[in-house]
Image 1 (cartoon, rainbow, N blue to C red):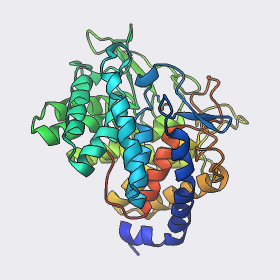
Image 2 (spheres, helix red, strand yellow):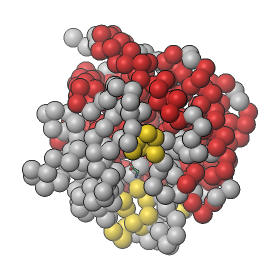
Image 3 (spheres, rainbow, N blue to C red):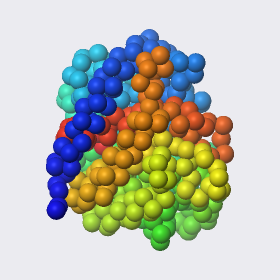
Image 4 (cartoon, helix red, strand yellow):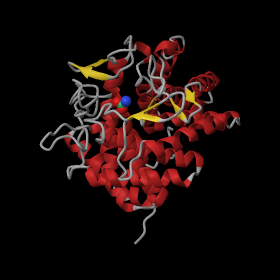
Length: 376
Ligand code: GLY
């Protein structure tokens, strides 16, 4: 029997209500610990919020805390969350003046802060912030067909994570009526289909292009195990990112690619649903990344909705169940929700909390609750 998304999500109402209750119990204490901090939360050390390791206010995850606050505002209507989201958004203004440290993640930074604020409150300052950020992102476009990710001597470097930043450009075209932003986003997404996603549905994290000609020069490991491996968070960025590009543009190929990546992801994720950091890391190496699971759950839920495929919904639900049972900390002593996240395979940041894992977990629960608001 075919089920539509509404029927699927209602079938797990008990789980949704249980986790929603836990979020509502936990987050007031997490908010209290953030009040008055001179930085925006990234991770947790000794049960207190801690900042990103470098880049200061330009640290790439600084939109996720305001995003998390808006998510809780959607869930509860509690004005304290809106106020904290707006406090963080105002702090981000300082980043606009630090051009040298800005990067393609202006999408994450301003879409989840100012973008959500404008769409929920019509705050005109927030609209202008989004458009300024979109112009910065569009300014990183190389006419060979890609958006450069990082700075210094990496003019030809593009990364799969950028699929999520494209949503800033789609919104900018929607709000201004100027198609340039969407055209740039689609050129980048088309390049990503050709050069990041492999025939088996796995993805490169990084592709280095010749910035003069657009020729592919190299595909290094990035945050994954090795060149040619399959960093699970990269798979999740592609899975959700292409689904969102389909939602914003209607281009069918993006949906097809998202499904191809999803099918690869589902063929690799361990039976316990908490992804290994890299699906091609050595046998017996049990390094995990709960964050990849949370992002993938959001993408799988969109695929379930778009294609009315229960298999995707069941996988999203199983993932959220596993994260809740084995990675979530509901005790309010520590402010973050998910543990067992990994920054990068070869880095030292293993088994940590990461604010974006909490955001995507909460976003997924909002989808289960039937909230129609798409943050992207
Ligand atoms: N490259 C950003 C991330 O850690 O996913």
